[in-house]
Length: 271
Length: 349
Image 1 (cartoon, helix red, strand yellow):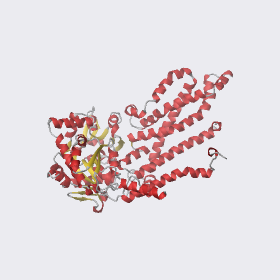
Image 2: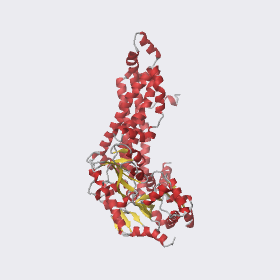
Image 3: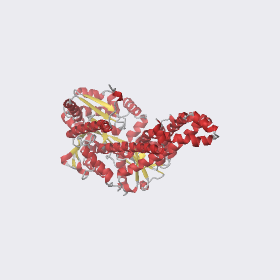
Image 4: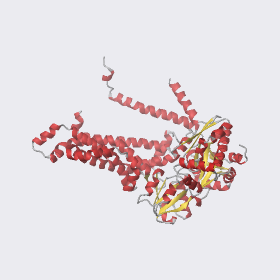
C-alpha cells in the first residue's frame, strides 16, 4: 500500500486544498461580522464586505476631497519607494561587505565581530538617535529599513561565501587567478542568486520597519494611513490595507523569485 | 455539528456584543493623563471598592497604557466605561454607533494643550510651516481653532502625523519648527531653547473636556453603576485637593504614577480646570456653552471625515446636552448627563 507521506495531490486538488483555510477564514469573518452588525448596525470593528468595498472604492478609485489625490495610490507609491530604496541599499552593502568578509580573512577579522554586534541592536530602540542624525524626512525612514536589514544580509552573504566549495577557489588559483579575479569571476556569480534569496527572506523585516517608520512621523504611506484611521477605529479601511500589504509583499517576493529563476536557472535546478 | 458550532459562535458573540442586561460586575478603563490619574488613587485606596460595595456591585478599574486602544476597547464593548475627551467620545464610540453617556465631567484643559513655535512668538508665523502633531486628536482640533483665531486655514500649513511617544525627540531635530501637543510633553518642549508657546487651550477654555464616558444602555439598566462611580469620583477628588499632608501624599503618588513628582503633577493640575465640586461640574454641563462647544467639535470632526464618509453634515450624530440637542434628534449617540453629578452635589449618593 502507498504510504500517506508518498501520495501527492494533483494540481487542481492542491489549489482547492490550499484555498480551504482562506475560505473558512472569510466565512467565519462574515458570520461574526453579521452578528455584530445585527446588534449594532454602526459597528466599526468588523465591517461588512459591502462596507469594505465602499471604503476601497473611496480610497482607491476616487480622488480625495481634500487633496485631490488617489489616497491608496499615493500611499502605495510612497511606501514602495521607501521600501525599494531601503532594500536596494541594504542589498548592495550586504553584497559588498558580505563577500569581502567571506573572501578575505583580514577583512573578516576586522569587521565580522562589529557586524555581529550591530545586528543585535534592535533598531526601533534607537529611533530618537536616528531622528536626530537623519532628520524626519525620507532619509530616516529609509535608514530604519537599511539598519534593520543590512546586518542580516552581510552576515548571511558572509556565511554563503564561506560555504562555497573550497576546491573551486583553489582551482581558480592554480590556473593563475588573483584575489580580485577569484572574487569577481568565481564568488560573485554564485553569490548573486543567494543574495536574491536572502533579500526575499528579509522582505518581511523590511515591511515591519517601514510600517513602524511611517507610524511615527509622515504625511503619506500605507503605515501612515493605518495608524491614522486607527484613531477612529476605521477597520473598513485598515482590513483592506492589511490585505493589500500582504499582496504587495507576496508580489515582490514572487517577482524577485521569477527574476532569479530567469537570470540564474542553474541555481534553481541545483536542489 | 455545523449547527452546534454556529450556535456556539452566535451565543459567544451575542454575549460580547450586547452588555445591555442588568448585572453586578462592571469594568472601566482609563489611561495616564493628569485629569484621569485620580482613578489610580480610587483603585489603590479602595474608594471605588467602598462605593461599589455600598451599591452591592463590583467595579474593576483598569489602567490601559495606550489611550486610543482604551477607547477602542470600550467601543467594542470590552469595558462599560472609559476616560476620554469630548472629541474622542464623539468620533470613536458615538460615531461607531455605541450610544455613550458622559457621566462625569471631570475637568477641562486650561493650558494643558498648546502650540509651540521655534524662533517666533507670533502664531501667524506658523503659515507655511510643517506642524508635527497627532493627527485627528485634540491637538489637531486646537490647531484648527487657533488658526481660526488669526484668519488662517489648515491649507496654509502642512500637518505631519507624529506619534506622541516620539514628539520630544522629534522636536529636538533641526527640521522641526512647529508642534502642537499636550502635557507633560508640552512643558518639556516649551522648556527647550528658542521655543515659544504661541497658543494654548486656556484661550479656548472649556472646549477640550475630560470625561468619564459610560455605555448608555448599561447606565440605564444599572443606575447604581452610575451612582457608585460618581460617588467614588468626588470622594477621590476630595482626598487629593488642598495643602493637607494627606492630600499632598496622594498627589505625590499620582505624580509618581504618571512619571513625574509632586511639583510636576501640581504644575499639570495648574493648567487643568478640575471640577472638584460636583456643583461646578453640573453648572458647566448645564450651560449652553457646552452645546456650542460640541457644535465646534462636531464641525471639525465632520470636516476631517471623522463622522464617517457617508455623513451628510456635522449634525449626523445627535449630541444631547442639558441645554438642548445638537444635530440629529433621531440619532442621538452622545449624551451629557448631569443628573448623577447633581445627586453628588445634593449629597444624595
